[in-house]
Length: 172
Image 1 (cartoon, rainbow, N blue to C red):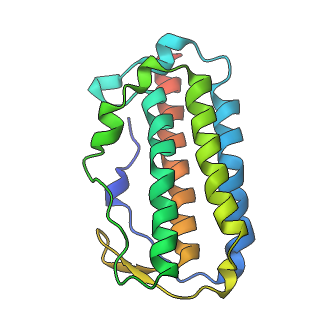
Image 2 (image 1 turned 60 degrees about the vertical axis):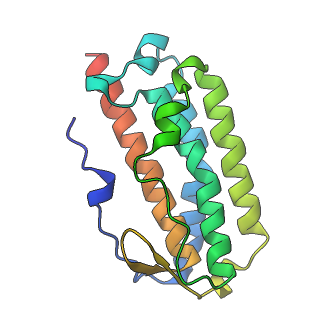
């Protein structure tokens, strides 16, 4: 598959906080976008691990697993922590979660529930007024809350792109 690796991505966070509404909408729409993408996709395709890599189900489960990290990082910035909470760069939780044993409906609902919790957090803070930053541990780049949100939306779209590629290859 031709998708670039997530960890190779570089980000420019020089955009204005006025982009918040657009980014929020991307986050809000991601669960429904995934549901639409995956409706009527047969189970064998959803569970297939191309070249030993993650299946569609594992990508969806991964998105749900990372939602608590995004919320923690938002709190890191609100609490003025110098460095954001790191992630598990090996994605051990995703690899060990057994997502292929769940139905796609269960995984999509889990992602929806986790994303709703993230959006609820955002609805309770004034993101546009929060200009503090914390350092992203892998990228060594300061991030504002809006940058975390943009990063999350891009992460969603990265995985949706990989999911689309898997489906395309397997349904030829």
